[in-house]
Image (tube, rainbow, N blue to C red):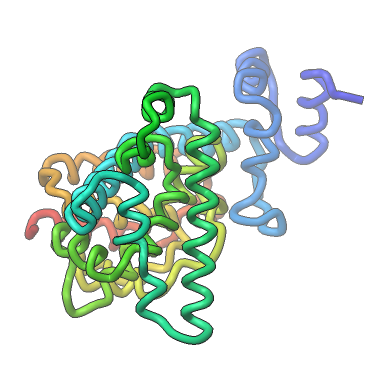
Length: 319
C-alpha cells in the first residue's frame, strides 16, 4: 500500500533519519521520496550506505546535486553543439556534399582501415549506425527539419540528421568516420599529436553522453553513478598531459569538471568563462562541506578535489 507523507516521515525516522516540522515535511513533499531519501542514502552503489542521521543532510545532498545539474547542463549542451559543428564542417568538406547518403558512402568508412575480426566488428558498428539513423529520421518524420526533405523527395542533409541525433548517436557516428575525417576534427580542436587524439575524442564524447543523459533525466550525478562503463585510462592521460591535473579516474564528479573545462578551452571559450565554471563548483563544494559532517562529505567528494581544482586554475591561467 502506498505510504502517506506522514508514513514516509515515520519510515525515515525508523531508519535513523531525524525529520521534523512542517518545513521539512514540505521539503520532502516537494522533492519526492526517491530524491528525498532513496536516491541519496548511498554513494555510488546501494551497498555504500551513507551514515545519514538528519533530513537536513539529505536535503544538502539534494540541493548540491541539483546545483551541479544546473551548472553542468548549459556547458554540456554547448560542447555537444560545438562538437557536432566541428564534425559537420569536416564531413561536408570530406564528402564535398551535405547529403547524408554521400557522407555515408564517402566518410563513414572507418571499417576499410581494418582487416579480419576488426574489419567485421567495424563493419557491424557501421551497419548498426545506419539502423540508428534510419530510426531517428523516421521517428522525427513529422518535424519540419526532417519532414521538409521527405515532402520534396530529397536526401536528408547531414545537418538535419544532427538536429535530431542524441549525443550517443553522435558518438557512434564519430566512431565510424574515416581516420582522415577524425584527424581533421581533432586538429581543428587543437588536440595533441603525440597521443591518439582521434580515439580520445571518442572517449570524451561517450563520457559526456552518460553525464548528459543523467542530467536530462534528472538522475543523481553527485557520485558519478551514471557511468555506464569504465572510462579509458588514456583519457585520463590526455587530461593530465594537457591540464597538468593528476590522479584523474572519473570516480569523483570533480574529474568531469576537468573534462568540461579542457573541452571548453579547446573550443575557444574565454579564461573568464572557464574560471566561472571552476569557481561556481568550488563554491558549491564549500556549501556542501559546511552542511555535512566529514564522514558523509568525504564519501561524495574525494580529498584530492582541492588539489585538482588548484591545478585546473593554473591550467586556465596559462592557457
